[in-house]
Amino acid sequence: MFPEQKRLLDKEGTLIKKTKKVLPILFTLFIGFSLIFIQAPKAEAHSTLIETTPEKMEVTDTSPKFLELRFNEPIEQDLADITIYDWNAKPVISKQSVGGEKRSKVLHINLPNLKQGTYTVQWSVVSLDGHPVSGSYMFAVGKETKGGAESIKSKDGSSVPLLVATRTIVEILLLIGGGLYWFHLLAKRKKFVEQDILPKKVKLISSLILLLGTALEMLIYTLSLPDGLFQTIIDGRWDLLLHFPFIVMVAVQLLLIILLFIPEMVEAWYLAIWFLLVIIPAFGGHVWGMEHPYIAVVPRIIHQLSIALWVGALSYLVIYLIRNKLFSREKLSSTFRSFFVKNVLTASIMVIISGIIMVILQTGWSTVIAEWGNWSTILFVKIFLVILMLLFALYQTLKWKKIGQFSTPRILRIEWLIALVIIFLGVWLSQSAYPIPSKSYNSVLSSGQEKVQVKIAKLQAGDQKMTLTFPASENHAPDRVQVSMEMPKHGMKSGPFIATLKKDGVYQVELPFTMSGTWDMTIQAEYSEMEIKEWKDQVFVNLSGNE
Image 1 (cartoon, one colour):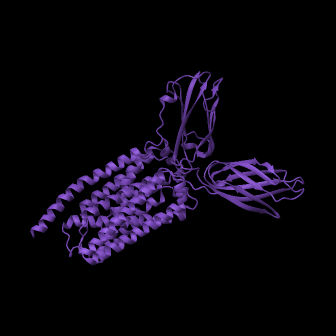
Image 2: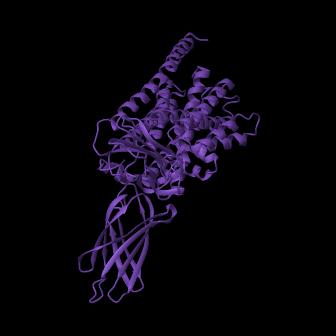
Protein backbone atom coordinates (compact mmCIF):
# COMPACT_ATOMS: atom_id res chain seq x y z
CA MET A 1 0.00 0.00 0.00
CA PHE A 2 1.32 3.43 -0.92
CA PRO A 3 2.19 5.84 1.95
CA GLU A 4 -0.32 8.39 0.67
CA GLN A 5 -3.11 5.81 0.66
CA LYS A 6 -2.11 4.65 4.16
CA ARG A 7 -2.16 8.26 5.38
CA LEU A 8 -5.63 8.77 3.90
CA LEU A 9 -6.88 5.56 5.48
CA ASP A 10 -5.50 6.45 8.92
CA LYS A 11 -6.96 9.93 8.68
CA GLU A 12 -10.32 8.57 7.52
CA GLY A 13 -10.32 5.91 10.26
CA THR A 14 -9.70 8.53 12.94
CA LEU A 15 -12.43 10.77 11.48
CA ILE A 16 -14.89 7.88 11.41
CA LYS A 17 -14.22 7.05 15.06
CA LYS A 18 -14.71 10.67 16.10
CA THR A 19 -17.84 11.01 13.97
CA LYS A 20 -19.37 7.84 15.43
CA LYS A 21 -18.94 9.35 18.90
CA VAL A 22 -20.09 12.87 18.03
CA LEU A 23 -23.14 12.23 15.82
CA PRO A 24 -25.31 10.50 18.46
CA ILE A 25 -24.44 13.22 20.97
CA LEU A 26 -25.31 15.99 18.52
CA PHE A 27 -28.58 14.38 17.57
CA THR A 28 -29.55 13.80 21.21
CA LEU A 29 -28.74 17.42 22.07
CA PHE A 30 -30.78 18.63 19.10
CA ILE A 31 -33.85 16.70 20.26
CA GLY A 32 -33.33 17.87 23.84
CA PHE A 33 -33.03 21.55 22.94
CA SER A 34 -36.00 21.29 20.57
CA LEU A 35 -38.15 19.84 23.32
CA ILE A 36 -37.11 22.68 25.64
CA PHE A 37 -37.38 25.68 23.33
CA ILE A 38 -40.32 24.70 21.13
CA GLN A 39 -43.70 24.91 22.78
CA ALA A 40 -45.11 21.44 23.42
CA PRO A 41 -47.82 20.65 20.86
CA LYS A 42 -51.36 20.34 22.07
CA ALA A 43 -53.49 17.41 21.10
CA GLU A 44 -56.34 18.36 18.83
CA ALA A 45 -58.92 17.77 21.53
CA HIS A 46 -62.35 17.82 19.93
CA SER A 47 -64.22 17.05 23.16
CA THR A 48 -64.82 20.35 24.95
CA LEU A 49 -66.63 20.92 28.24
CA ILE A 50 -69.32 23.51 27.51
CA GLU A 51 -71.59 23.44 30.59
CA THR A 52 -71.41 22.23 34.19
CA THR A 53 -73.82 21.74 37.08
CA PRO A 54 -72.83 23.15 39.57
CA GLU A 55 -71.28 25.89 37.45
CA LYS A 56 -67.61 26.87 37.53
CA MET A 57 -66.81 28.99 40.61
CA GLU A 58 -70.45 28.80 41.75
CA VAL A 59 -71.14 28.97 45.50
CA THR A 60 -74.27 26.93 46.25
CA ASP A 61 -76.40 27.48 49.35
CA THR A 62 -76.86 23.76 49.95
CA SER A 63 -75.09 20.58 48.90
CA PRO A 64 -75.93 19.80 45.23
CA LYS A 65 -77.76 16.53 44.63
CA PHE A 66 -75.87 15.68 41.44
CA LEU A 67 -72.99 16.68 39.17
CA GLU A 68 -73.45 17.08 35.42
CA LEU A 69 -70.84 17.77 32.75
CA ARG A 70 -72.10 18.59 29.26
CA PHE A 71 -69.71 18.25 26.30
CA ASN A 72 -69.85 19.48 22.71
CA GLU A 73 -69.90 15.92 21.37
CA PRO A 74 -71.04 12.50 22.58
CA ILE A 75 -68.33 10.75 24.57
CA GLU A 76 -68.00 7.14 25.70
CA GLN A 77 -69.47 6.82 29.19
CA ASP A 78 -67.37 3.71 29.88
CA LEU A 79 -64.17 5.73 29.37
CA ALA A 80 -65.14 8.73 31.49
CA ASP A 81 -63.52 9.34 34.89
CA ILE A 82 -64.65 11.94 37.44
CA THR A 83 -63.00 12.62 40.80
CA ILE A 84 -64.08 15.32 43.28
CA TYR A 85 -61.53 16.58 45.83
CA ASP A 86 -62.19 18.65 48.92
CA TRP A 87 -60.18 21.74 49.99
CA ASN A 88 -57.51 19.44 51.50
CA ALA A 89 -57.03 17.66 48.14
CA LYS A 90 -58.65 14.51 49.51
CA PRO A 91 -60.96 12.58 47.16
CA VAL A 92 -64.60 12.80 48.21
CA ILE A 93 -65.99 10.74 45.37
CA SER A 94 -64.36 8.96 42.44
CA LYS A 95 -66.26 7.50 39.51
CA GLN A 96 -64.32 5.48 36.96
CA SER A 97 -66.40 4.29 34.04
CA VAL A 98 -69.46 6.42 34.68
CA GLY A 99 -71.71 3.96 32.86
CA GLY A 100 -75.18 4.71 31.54
CA GLU A 101 -75.59 5.17 27.81
CA LYS A 102 -72.61 3.98 25.76
CA ARG A 103 -72.34 7.40 24.15
CA SER A 104 -73.82 10.64 25.45
CA LYS A 105 -72.96 14.33 25.63
CA VAL A 106 -73.85 14.47 29.35
CA LEU A 107 -72.01 12.84 32.26
CA HIS A 108 -74.28 12.56 35.32
CA ILE A 109 -73.39 11.27 38.80
CA ASN A 110 -75.30 11.54 42.07
CA LEU A 111 -73.45 13.25 44.92
CA PRO A 112 -73.35 12.49 48.64
CA ASN A 113 -74.01 15.26 51.15
CA LEU A 114 -71.08 17.69 50.80
CA LYS A 115 -69.82 19.75 53.73
CA GLN A 116 -69.22 23.50 53.52
CA GLY A 117 -66.09 24.33 51.52
CA THR A 118 -64.47 24.46 48.07
CA TYR A 119 -64.39 21.37 45.83
CA THR A 120 -62.31 20.58 42.75
CA VAL A 121 -63.79 18.43 39.99
CA GLN A 122 -61.30 16.56 37.81
CA TRP A 123 -62.64 14.88 34.70
CA SER A 124 -61.13 12.75 31.95
CA VAL A 125 -62.85 11.64 28.73
CA VAL A 126 -61.90 10.34 25.29
CA SER A 127 -62.80 12.27 22.13
CA LEU A 128 -64.43 10.68 19.12
CA ASP A 129 -61.02 10.84 17.40
CA GLY A 130 -59.31 8.90 20.21
CA HIS A 131 -57.52 11.78 21.96
CA PRO A 132 -57.66 11.67 25.77
CA VAL A 133 -58.93 15.00 27.13
CA SER A 134 -58.99 16.09 30.76
CA GLY A 135 -59.61 19.18 32.83
CA SER A 136 -60.76 20.51 36.18
CA TYR A 137 -62.87 23.26 37.72
CA MET A 138 -64.00 24.41 41.18
CA PHE A 139 -67.27 25.10 42.94
CA ALA A 140 -68.08 25.71 46.60
CA VAL A 141 -70.84 24.75 49.04
CA GLY A 142 -71.91 27.40 51.53
CA LYS A 143 -68.60 29.24 51.72
CA GLU A 144 -65.35 29.20 49.75
CA THR A 145 -62.21 27.82 51.40
CA LYS A 146 -58.58 27.88 50.32
CA GLY A 147 -56.84 24.88 48.78
CA GLY A 148 -58.28 22.30 46.44
CA ALA A 149 -57.21 23.15 42.89
CA GLU A 150 -53.74 24.32 43.92
CA SER A 151 -53.02 20.84 45.25
CA ILE A 152 -54.19 19.03 42.13
CA LYS A 153 -51.92 18.91 39.09
CA SER A 154 -53.11 17.77 35.70
CA LYS A 155 -50.93 15.28 33.83
CA ASP A 156 -52.54 16.04 30.48
CA GLY A 157 -49.92 16.27 27.72
CA SER A 158 -46.95 15.31 29.93
CA SER A 159 -46.16 12.26 27.78
CA VAL A 160 -46.11 14.15 24.47
CA PRO A 161 -42.33 14.96 24.37
CA LEU A 162 -41.43 11.37 25.29
CA LEU A 163 -43.81 10.04 22.64
CA VAL A 164 -42.27 12.34 20.01
CA ALA A 165 -38.74 11.21 20.94
CA THR A 166 -39.71 7.53 20.83
CA ARG A 167 -41.57 7.89 17.54
CA THR A 168 -38.56 9.70 16.06
CA ILE A 169 -36.20 6.83 16.88
CA VAL A 170 -38.65 4.24 15.56
CA GLU A 171 -39.40 6.16 12.37
CA ILE A 172 -35.68 6.76 11.68
CA LEU A 173 -35.07 3.02 11.95
CA LEU A 174 -38.10 2.24 9.77
CA LEU A 175 -37.12 4.67 7.01
CA ILE A 176 -33.42 3.78 7.02
CA GLY A 177 -34.17 0.06 7.26
CA GLY A 178 -36.68 0.07 4.40
CA GLY A 179 -34.67 2.43 2.18
CA LEU A 180 -31.41 0.59 2.83
CA TYR A 181 -33.02 -2.75 2.00
CA TRP A 182 -34.47 -1.48 -1.28
CA PHE A 183 -31.36 0.39 -2.40
CA HIS A 184 -29.08 -2.55 -1.57
CA LEU A 185 -31.37 -4.87 -3.51
CA LEU A 186 -31.21 -2.54 -6.52
CA ALA A 187 -27.40 -2.36 -6.23
CA LYS A 188 -27.15 -6.16 -6.12
CA ARG A 189 -29.28 -6.50 -9.23
CA LYS A 190 -27.00 -4.02 -11.00
CA LYS A 191 -24.01 -6.16 -9.91
CA PHE A 192 -22.43 -3.35 -7.86
CA VAL A 193 -22.25 -5.56 -4.75
CA GLU A 194 -22.47 -9.26 -4.03
CA GLN A 195 -22.74 -9.47 -0.24
CA ASP A 196 -25.04 -7.81 2.31
CA ILE A 197 -24.04 -4.28 3.27
CA LEU A 198 -24.79 -4.83 6.99
CA PRO A 199 -23.51 -7.68 9.18
CA LYS A 200 -26.18 -9.99 10.61
CA LYS A 201 -25.34 -8.86 14.14
CA VAL A 202 -26.08 -5.20 13.28
CA LYS A 203 -29.35 -6.21 11.59
CA LEU A 204 -30.43 -8.20 14.64
CA ILE A 205 -29.62 -5.39 17.08
CA SER A 206 -31.43 -2.81 14.90
CA SER A 207 -34.49 -5.06 14.64
CA LEU A 208 -34.57 -5.56 18.41
CA ILE A 209 -34.33 -1.78 18.99
CA LEU A 210 -37.16 -1.30 16.50
CA LEU A 211 -39.25 -3.93 18.29
CA LEU A 212 -38.62 -2.46 21.73
CA GLY A 213 -39.16 1.11 20.47
CA THR A 214 -42.53 0.20 18.97
CA ALA A 215 -43.58 -1.53 22.18
CA LEU A 216 -42.51 1.61 24.10
CA GLU A 217 -44.61 3.76 21.73
CA MET A 218 -47.64 1.67 22.60
CA LEU A 219 -46.87 1.83 26.32
CA ILE A 220 -46.40 5.63 26.42
CA TYR A 221 -49.61 6.22 24.51
CA THR A 222 -51.70 3.80 26.57
CA LEU A 223 -50.48 5.38 29.82
CA SER A 224 -52.22 8.59 28.74
CA LEU A 225 -55.54 6.76 28.27
CA PRO A 226 -58.23 6.31 30.93
CA ASP A 227 -57.68 3.65 33.59
CA GLY A 228 -59.51 0.43 32.92
CA LEU A 229 -59.79 1.01 29.16
CA PHE A 230 -58.39 -2.36 28.15
CA GLN A 231 -60.42 -4.20 30.76
CA THR A 232 -63.52 -2.54 29.32
CA ILE A 233 -62.50 -3.68 25.83
CA ILE A 234 -61.83 -7.25 27.05
CA ASP A 235 -65.27 -7.20 28.72
CA GLY A 236 -66.85 -6.89 25.27
CA ARG A 237 -66.50 -3.29 24.12
CA TRP A 238 -64.22 -4.13 21.15
CA ASP A 239 -65.78 -1.29 19.17
CA LEU A 240 -63.84 1.13 21.38
CA LEU A 241 -60.64 0.22 19.49
CA LEU A 242 -62.02 2.20 16.53
CA HIS A 243 -61.66 5.34 18.70
CA PHE A 244 -57.88 4.86 18.84
CA PRO A 245 -56.38 4.68 15.32
CA PHE A 246 -52.89 5.18 16.80
CA ILE A 247 -53.21 1.94 18.81
CA VAL A 248 -54.29 0.04 15.70
CA MET A 249 -51.43 1.57 13.69
CA VAL A 250 -48.76 0.68 16.27
CA ALA A 251 -50.23 -2.81 16.81
CA VAL A 252 -49.96 -3.55 13.07
CA GLN A 253 -46.44 -2.11 13.08
CA LEU A 254 -45.48 -4.39 15.97
CA LEU A 255 -46.88 -7.44 14.17
CA LEU A 256 -44.96 -6.64 10.97
CA ILE A 257 -41.69 -6.22 12.87
CA ILE A 258 -42.19 -9.64 14.46
CA LEU A 259 -42.74 -11.09 10.97
CA LEU A 260 -39.36 -9.67 9.94
CA PHE A 261 -37.68 -12.13 12.32
CA ILE A 262 -38.91 -15.14 10.34
CA PRO A 263 -35.76 -16.47 8.59
CA GLU A 264 -35.26 -17.90 5.11
CA MET A 265 -38.42 -16.40 3.56
CA VAL A 266 -38.61 -15.46 -0.12
CA GLU A 267 -37.37 -12.00 -1.12
CA ALA A 268 -40.90 -10.76 -1.90
CA TRP A 269 -41.85 -11.44 1.74
CA TYR A 270 -39.33 -8.96 3.14
CA LEU A 271 -40.01 -6.46 0.35
CA ALA A 272 -43.71 -6.44 1.22
CA ILE A 273 -43.10 -6.14 4.98
CA TRP A 274 -40.65 -3.25 4.59
CA PHE A 275 -43.08 -1.52 2.22
CA LEU A 276 -45.87 -1.74 4.80
CA LEU A 277 -43.61 -0.70 7.69
CA VAL A 278 -42.48 2.43 5.84
CA ILE A 279 -45.99 3.57 4.87
CA ILE A 280 -47.68 2.85 8.24
CA PRO A 281 -46.83 6.30 9.74
CA ALA A 282 -48.70 7.87 6.80
CA PHE A 283 -51.95 6.69 8.41
CA GLY A 284 -51.29 8.55 11.65
CA GLY A 285 -50.90 12.25 12.39
CA HIS A 286 -53.69 14.57 11.23
CA VAL A 287 -54.91 12.61 8.22
CA TRP A 288 -58.15 11.38 9.84
CA GLY A 289 -59.19 14.92 10.80
CA MET A 290 -59.18 16.09 7.18
CA GLU A 291 -62.17 16.38 4.86
CA HIS A 292 -60.99 13.66 2.43
CA PRO A 293 -58.65 11.39 4.43
CA TYR A 294 -58.41 8.64 1.80
CA ILE A 295 -57.24 11.19 -0.78
CA ALA A 296 -54.90 12.92 1.67
CA VAL A 297 -53.19 9.65 2.62
CA VAL A 298 -51.90 9.05 -0.96
CA PRO A 299 -49.27 11.85 -1.02
CA ARG A 300 -48.33 10.87 2.55
CA ILE A 301 -47.54 7.32 1.40
CA ILE A 302 -45.48 8.65 -1.51
CA HIS A 303 -43.71 11.03 0.89
CA GLN A 304 -42.78 8.19 3.24
CA LEU A 305 -41.52 5.94 0.45
CA SER A 306 -39.47 8.75 -1.13
CA ILE A 307 -37.85 9.75 2.17
CA ALA A 308 -37.00 6.10 2.83
CA LEU A 309 -35.27 5.70 -0.54
CA TRP A 310 -33.38 9.01 -0.14
CA VAL A 311 -32.19 8.32 3.41
CA GLY A 312 -31.57 4.66 2.59
CA ALA A 313 -29.31 5.58 -0.35
CA LEU A 314 -27.32 8.02 1.81
CA SER A 315 -27.02 5.41 4.57
CA TYR A 316 -25.88 2.83 2.02
CA LEU A 317 -23.08 5.10 0.79
CA VAL A 318 -22.00 6.00 4.35
CA ILE A 319 -21.82 2.31 5.36
CA TYR A 320 -20.13 1.36 2.09
CA LEU A 321 -17.36 3.92 2.62
CA ILE A 322 -16.88 2.93 6.26
CA ARG A 323 -16.56 -0.75 5.34
CA ASN A 324 -14.23 -0.25 2.39
CA LYS A 325 -12.19 2.69 3.77
CA LEU A 326 -10.88 3.53 0.33
CA PHE A 327 -12.20 5.91 -2.33
CA SER A 328 -11.10 4.29 -5.57
CA ARG A 329 -12.50 4.37 -9.06
CA GLU A 330 -12.97 0.61 -9.01
CA LYS A 331 -15.05 0.75 -5.83
CA LEU A 332 -17.22 3.73 -6.81
CA SER A 333 -17.25 3.82 -10.59
CA SER A 334 -18.94 6.37 -12.82
CA THR A 335 -21.61 3.74 -13.51
CA PHE A 336 -22.37 3.50 -9.80
CA ARG A 337 -22.37 7.30 -9.56
CA SER A 338 -24.99 7.50 -12.29
CA PHE A 339 -27.06 4.80 -10.57
CA PHE A 340 -26.80 6.49 -7.16
CA VAL A 341 -27.55 10.02 -8.41
CA LYS A 342 -30.55 8.87 -10.48
CA ASN A 343 -32.21 7.17 -7.49
CA VAL A 344 -31.47 9.99 -5.03
CA LEU A 345 -32.64 12.64 -7.51
CA THR A 346 -35.90 10.75 -8.15
CA ALA A 347 -36.50 10.32 -4.43
CA SER A 348 -35.76 13.97 -3.60
CA ILE A 349 -38.08 15.25 -6.35
CA MET A 350 -40.90 13.01 -5.10
CA VAL A 351 -40.30 14.18 -1.50
CA ILE A 352 -40.67 17.81 -2.57
CA ILE A 353 -43.73 17.27 -4.79
CA SER A 354 -45.57 15.10 -2.25
CA GLY A 355 -44.67 17.54 0.56
CA ILE A 356 -46.14 20.47 -1.37
CA ILE A 357 -49.35 18.52 -2.02
CA MET A 358 -49.59 17.47 1.64
CA VAL A 359 -49.49 21.10 2.79
CA ILE A 360 -52.11 22.10 0.20
CA LEU A 361 -54.49 19.32 1.28
CA GLN A 362 -53.92 19.80 4.99
CA THR A 363 -53.95 23.56 5.40
CA GLY A 364 -52.83 25.64 2.38
CA TRP A 365 -49.68 27.70 1.87
CA SER A 366 -51.42 31.05 2.34
CA THR A 367 -52.80 29.83 5.67
CA VAL A 368 -49.35 28.65 6.77
CA ILE A 369 -48.11 32.23 6.31
CA ALA A 370 -51.20 34.06 7.57
CA GLU A 371 -51.65 31.86 10.69
CA TRP A 372 -47.98 31.69 11.60
CA GLY A 373 -47.17 29.59 14.64
CA ASN A 374 -45.01 26.69 15.81
CA TRP A 375 -46.23 24.43 13.01
CA SER A 376 -45.31 26.98 10.32
CA THR A 377 -41.88 27.58 11.89
CA ILE A 378 -41.06 23.87 12.04
CA LEU A 379 -42.27 23.42 8.45
CA PHE A 380 -40.02 26.16 7.07
CA VAL A 381 -37.03 24.90 9.08
CA LYS A 382 -37.67 21.51 7.48
CA ILE A 383 -37.86 23.11 4.01
CA PHE A 384 -34.59 24.99 4.62
CA LEU A 385 -32.84 21.76 5.64
CA VAL A 386 -34.14 19.94 2.55
CA ILE A 387 -32.75 22.73 0.33
CA LEU A 388 -29.44 22.50 2.23
CA MET A 389 -29.33 18.75 1.58
CA LEU A 390 -29.94 19.33 -2.13
CA LEU A 391 -27.12 21.89 -2.29
CA PHE A 392 -24.74 19.48 -0.55
CA ALA A 393 -25.80 16.72 -2.94
CA LEU A 394 -25.25 18.95 -5.98
CA TYR A 395 -21.78 19.95 -4.80
CA GLN A 396 -20.79 16.33 -4.08
CA THR A 397 -22.13 15.06 -7.40
CA LEU A 398 -20.28 17.71 -9.44
CA LYS A 399 -17.01 17.06 -7.58
CA TRP A 400 -17.48 13.29 -7.89
CA LYS A 401 -17.96 13.65 -11.64
CA LYS A 402 -15.08 16.10 -12.05
CA ILE A 403 -12.31 14.08 -10.34
CA GLY A 404 -13.76 10.64 -11.10
CA GLN A 405 -13.97 9.43 -7.49
CA PHE A 406 -15.99 10.14 -4.38
CA SER A 407 -13.99 12.51 -2.17
CA THR A 408 -16.49 14.22 0.19
CA PRO A 409 -17.24 11.71 2.99
CA ARG A 410 -17.45 14.43 5.65
CA ILE A 411 -20.13 16.36 3.74
CA LEU A 412 -21.97 13.07 3.14
CA ARG A 413 -22.14 12.41 6.87
CA ILE A 414 -23.39 15.95 7.52
CA GLU A 415 -26.06 15.45 4.85
CA TRP A 416 -27.06 12.16 6.48
CA LEU A 417 -27.32 13.82 9.90
CA ILE A 418 -29.51 16.59 8.42
CA ALA A 419 -31.79 13.87 7.03
CA LEU A 420 -32.26 12.48 10.55
CA VAL A 421 -33.12 15.95 11.85
CA ILE A 422 -35.68 16.34 9.05
CA ILE A 423 -37.32 13.06 10.08
CA PHE A 424 -37.52 14.32 13.67
CA LEU A 425 -39.16 17.55 12.49
CA GLY A 426 -41.64 15.51 10.43
CA VAL A 427 -42.65 13.53 13.52
CA TRP A 428 -42.95 16.78 15.50
CA LEU A 429 -45.22 18.25 12.82
CA SER A 430 -47.47 15.20 12.98
CA GLN A 431 -47.93 15.79 16.74
CA SER A 432 -48.52 19.56 16.43
CA ALA A 433 -51.73 21.47 15.78
CA TYR A 434 -51.58 22.94 12.30
CA PRO A 435 -53.08 26.26 11.06
CA ILE A 436 -56.60 25.83 9.74
CA PRO A 437 -57.66 27.55 6.50
CA SER A 438 -60.66 29.85 6.76
CA LYS A 439 -63.19 28.63 4.21
CA SER A 440 -66.51 30.33 3.60
CA TYR A 441 -69.88 29.05 2.44
CA ASN A 442 -71.90 30.88 -0.22
CA SER A 443 -74.65 28.98 -2.02
CA VAL A 444 -78.13 29.46 -3.50
CA LEU A 445 -80.48 26.68 -2.37
CA SER A 446 -83.72 25.79 -4.13
CA SER A 447 -86.98 24.35 -2.84
CA GLY A 448 -89.45 24.15 -5.70
CA GLN A 449 -89.76 27.69 -7.06
CA GLU A 450 -88.40 29.24 -3.87
CA LYS A 451 -84.71 30.09 -3.52
CA VAL A 452 -82.57 31.38 -0.68
CA GLN A 453 -79.00 32.60 -0.71
CA VAL A 454 -77.00 31.34 2.26
CA LYS A 455 -73.66 32.75 3.43
CA ILE A 456 -71.37 31.66 6.28
CA ALA A 457 -68.21 33.73 6.58
CA LYS A 458 -66.06 31.05 8.27
CA LEU A 459 -66.61 27.31 8.28
CA GLN A 460 -64.78 26.77 11.55
CA ALA A 461 -65.70 25.28 14.89
CA GLY A 462 -67.25 27.87 17.17
CA ASP A 463 -70.12 30.36 16.90
CA GLN A 464 -70.48 31.42 13.25
CA LYS A 465 -72.91 33.90 11.70
CA MET A 466 -75.18 32.78 8.86
CA THR A 467 -76.91 35.26 6.56
CA LEU A 468 -80.00 34.17 4.61
CA THR A 469 -81.33 36.33 1.78
CA PHE A 470 -84.80 35.61 0.34
CA PRO A 471 -85.88 37.07 -3.03
CA ALA A 472 -87.76 40.37 -2.75
CA SER A 473 -91.43 39.56 -3.32
CA GLU A 474 -94.50 41.49 -2.17
CA ASN A 475 -96.65 39.69 0.39
CA HIS A 476 -94.42 36.65 0.23
CA ALA A 477 -91.71 37.26 2.84
CA PRO A 478 -91.33 34.49 5.47
CA ASP A 479 -92.72 35.26 8.90
CA ARG A 480 -90.29 32.96 10.64
CA VAL A 481 -86.95 31.41 9.63
CA GLN A 482 -85.14 28.73 11.62
CA VAL A 483 -82.04 26.60 11.10
CA SER A 484 -81.29 23.13 12.49
CA MET A 485 -78.02 21.17 12.32
CA GLU A 486 -77.28 17.50 12.74
CA MET A 487 -74.37 15.04 12.70
CA PRO A 488 -76.15 11.66 12.37
CA LYS A 489 -72.88 9.72 12.45
CA HIS A 490 -72.14 11.04 15.94
CA GLY A 491 -75.73 11.27 17.19
CA MET A 492 -75.59 15.08 17.49
CA LYS A 493 -78.42 17.57 16.95
CA SER A 494 -78.48 21.34 17.43
CA GLY A 495 -81.32 23.79 17.11
CA PRO A 496 -83.65 24.89 15.79
CA PHE A 497 -82.11 28.37 15.95
CA ILE A 498 -84.44 31.27 15.14
CA ALA A 499 -83.10 33.78 12.61
CA THR A 500 -83.51 37.53 13.18
CA LEU A 501 -84.89 39.79 10.43
CA LYS A 502 -82.30 42.50 9.65
CA LYS A 503 -83.96 44.10 6.65
CA ASP A 504 -86.40 43.13 3.91
CA GLY A 505 -85.69 39.56 2.93
CA VAL A 506 -82.40 39.35 4.92
CA TYR A 507 -82.14 37.23 8.07
CA GLN A 508 -79.21 36.40 10.36
CA VAL A 509 -78.65 33.59 12.83
CA GLU A 510 -75.76 32.50 15.06
CA LEU A 511 -74.88 28.83 14.64
CA PRO A 512 -72.76 26.99 17.27
CA PHE A 513 -70.56 24.55 15.33
CA THR A 514 -69.44 22.60 18.39
CA MET A 515 -67.08 20.21 16.56
CA SER A 516 -65.37 19.70 13.23
CA GLY A 517 -66.79 17.42 10.56
CA THR A 518 -69.71 17.28 8.10
CA TRP A 519 -72.95 18.87 9.30
CA ASP A 520 -76.40 18.34 7.77
CA MET A 521 -78.06 21.76 7.64
CA THR A 522 -81.84 22.27 7.40
CA ILE A 523 -83.42 25.69 6.81
CA GLN A 524 -87.17 26.18 7.32
CA ALA A 525 -89.21 29.24 6.37
CA GLU A 526 -92.81 29.68 7.57
CA TYR A 527 -95.16 31.95 5.62
CA SER A 528 -98.42 33.62 6.63
CA GLU A 529 -100.42 31.19 4.51
CA MET A 530 -99.22 28.40 6.87
CA GLU A 531 -96.91 27.33 4.09
CA ILE A 532 -93.55 25.89 5.08
CA LYS A 533 -90.56 25.72 2.75
CA GLU A 534 -87.46 23.70 3.52
CA TRP A 535 -83.91 23.73 2.16
CA LYS A 536 -81.12 21.25 2.96
CA ASP A 537 -77.39 21.10 2.40
CA GLN A 538 -74.15 19.79 3.94
CA VAL A 539 -71.18 21.83 5.17
CA PHE A 540 -67.75 20.66 6.32
CA VAL A 541 -66.48 22.50 9.39
CA ASN A 542 -62.79 22.70 10.31
CA LEU A 543 -61.28 23.09 13.74
CA SER A 544 -61.06 26.66 14.97
CA GLY A 545 -57.67 28.25 14.34
CA ASN A 546 -54.26 27.12 15.47
CA GLU A 547 -54.60 25.19 18.74
